[in-house]
Amino acid sequence: MKIRAAGVLGFTLIELLVVLAVLAILAVVAFPSFSGLFERNNLKGAGEQLLQELYNAKFEAVRRNDDVHVSFAGGSTWCLGVGTEPTCNCGTSGSCNVSVRTAADFPDVSASSPSLLANSANQFFEPTMGGFTGPVSTCSPSSTPCRGRITLSHAQGGTLELQVSSMGRVRLCSPGANFAGVPACQ
Image (cartoon, rainbow, N blue to C red; front, side):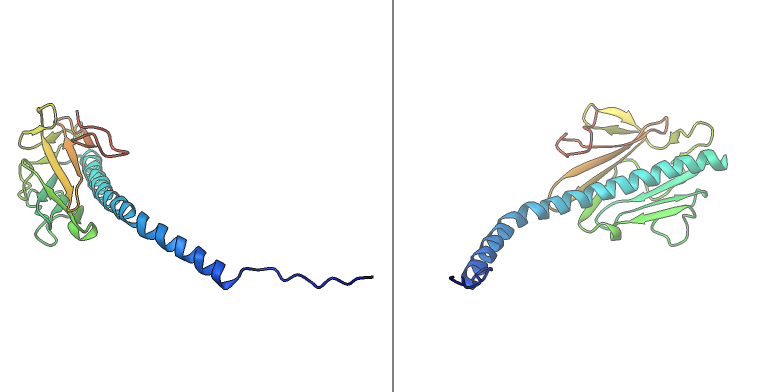
C-alpha cells in the first residue's frame, strides 16, 4: 500500500505578485474615468441641493401664507439664501432665516445668474399659488422667458441649469443635453 504525500494547496509568491501588478495597472487606467464621475456627481449634487432649496422656499411661502424671498450671489464662493424678510442676503450672516446653502459644500462648483440678485427684496415666491416674482431672464436653449436662472459649472467641465418660471416651477436641466440622469433644457 502506497501512502500519498498530502498536496500543499495555495499560491506561490510569484503568482501573487503577478495578480497584484495586473490590479495596479487596471487601477491606473480606470482612475481618470472615476475622477470624472466624482466631478459630475459633485455638480449634480449641487444642482439637486439648490433645486431642493428652491422647492422648500416655494413650500414655505404657501405654508406660511407669506412671501418667501430668495437671495443669490454667484462666483466660486456662491450662496443661495431663503428668508421671510425682504432684507434676506445670503452673503450676510443671519439675514436669511429659512436656509442658506453655500459653495463650501461643493468644491470646484461655481454658479452664476443673470437674473437672481443678492438683494432679495424683489424676488420671492408668493403665497397664493407659489408663483415666483423676480427679474425676467432668458432660459436656454429655446430663449423662453423665465423668472430665475442659475447656471452651475464644474472646474473640470460640465454645466447644469436651474430654471424658475413665473408660475414657480423649478427644474434642473442640462443645457447641452449631455449630462446623464438630468433632462435636457427646453
